[in-house]
Length: 273
Picture 1: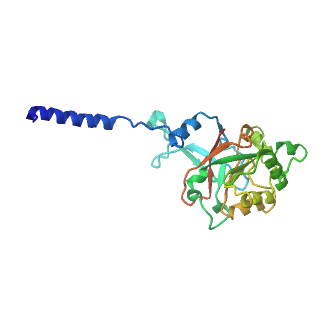
Picture 2 (picture 1 turned 60 degrees about the horizontal axis):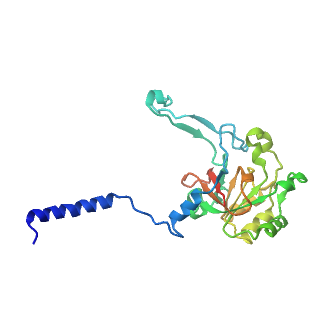
Picture 3 (picture 1 turned 180 degrees about the vertical axis):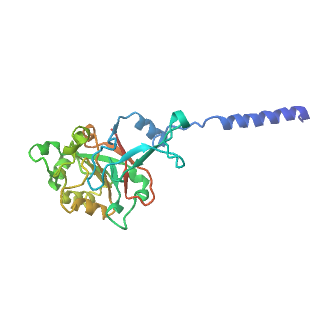
């Protein structure tokens, strides 16, 4: 039998051992199919930003008007906070939700549609396919992607996978900063109504995106109206699609979560294969 003093020493050693063990960082096994393994793979890949920075001079539909940026001010004094005076600073932004690279939620056109805070998280990271239409624009600068164009793309790259994000490359984004008036031109290259319906109904895509500020050039916004009133969402004013392959990449799309919001500037990027 242990003597009382020796027993106390043993108990203290056990307690200290337990505390040290609990304080040690957990060892996460890197196994096939684990989140740790997925992160290890993703972190080794090239990331491409598909988002424009936006400012008070960013191209926007004339019906919305430009954003205004200012320093956030003390409501009691009306004076902006500064690092020199207050130890911090903050910004105040005033703008429409559909500004810069942004998401259009179904509720943008549908009174009963999903709002930005209701879009499922699992739709915010998707396989990405890119339809490069730039070669077609040499003969037809305002070409609208057709079903025939999609099937030709599939002949070269395989069937458009269900659940993917389909992006349309036109290189309009190159005019975003250098020639904003040209960027806002009408007409412009976009999607045809038939192509949008085909991709959602026959290929089962989850969402779509493009470099222009609208989906198509129809006077009644046929493609945009149809997709938003059928429960789908889209990203407008995308950038740098020329740096992304036709298949094999992932797209990550994130935005703030305003309650019942119908649109908001988004941060979009691709993870290359």
